[in-house]
Image (cartoon, rainbow, N blue to C red):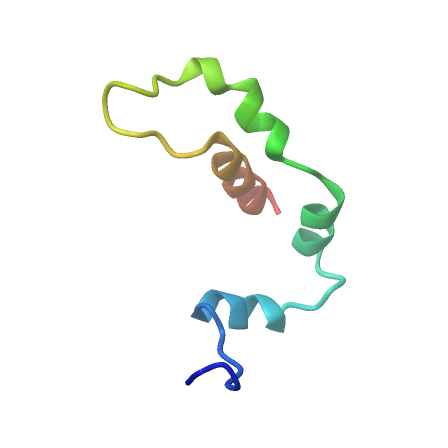
Length: 68
């Protein structure tokens, strides 16, 4: 029924598409693979007890956003 309609997944994807391709944060996101951070810090977090922590990758990206 909705296969022919062009739908966005969320409002964030619409906003992301409005950012120019030469913006510094987009350039950093395309140039740097941050996935190594989660693997590097995997042993620092307990998977079984307590409240689940935020992903370290997300936290680094937030810090970079604040710095820029």
